[in-house]
Length: 148
Length: 148
DNA sequence: CTAAACCCTAGACCATACTCTAGGGCAACC
DNA sequence: GGTTGCCCTAGAGTATGGTCTAGGGTTTAG
Image (cartoon, rainbow over all chains, first blue to last red; front, side):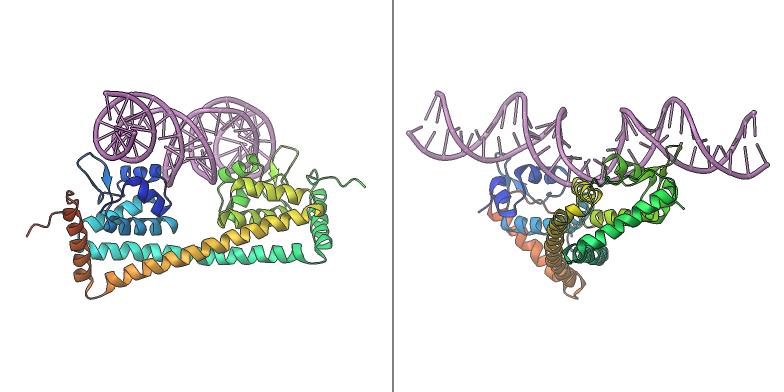
């Protein structure tokens, strides 16, 4: 039993275009062709494709995924290289997660302001300070004029 | 006291090109120009720019950041819209964080295999299964021939 | 007053990751 | 045996987010 490209697209959520694009980019050297030249995905292929999606969804570039897949195609001799590559990626993900966490807190802080009962007062204060700063520096006021 | 574009680039880590690009994209309507037509960034502008970076670094698209900034320029009347926009973004970030967390676990699982003393055995087993599957389906074996 | 070091705009160019079109072959049913 | 639906490749096109160049003005120190 093998799967057609259409079936794999449905299973993975990737488009047929994307699957063919990945193949062109050298991400799918493990997918064999049948006698008609059609791609025939085995369940093992699906497993590897899942790994590719995992790397892609965590922000790995196609060129690096290709490197990883190349290692896999080389067999067990490339285990140290695979480990190095994945560890580097793991560190990159952790760093990004931490950065996002910090930014998330900033956003929560903003949301707290916007949700508070004094939201309007606080926002007006900020605006007044910003406008005063423009004037103090002899600059045009870019904020919307408030017509009474 | 205002800052030149170069100083802001140094402070934010964005390139001068990127700052001008953001301005072109309508992300910096709050930055005024001095009498020579040069951008003059106030400290309030830096604060807003920091918010822009926060949104960008958490994956918000430029068009959505522009929408947010447009709301800010409108003053306190747009507080409900700002809140809606930021809440949606917050949810998007949380969902992405959760997805990354799952993928991270997959990567850790792979790394455990590659780090274990039986790594070679396990990888060889996987490879053997994959190759058997190709043969069982009358497909060419795409894996590297192992020369003894 | 001039050279170095800035600033500006418009618009071309680039990288990444798709997405689609054109042109053509294979498979399965009526 | 023809129509429908799926498969293929090559290559053009798109979206996003920058990055850089050309041509030209400003500011500052010698």
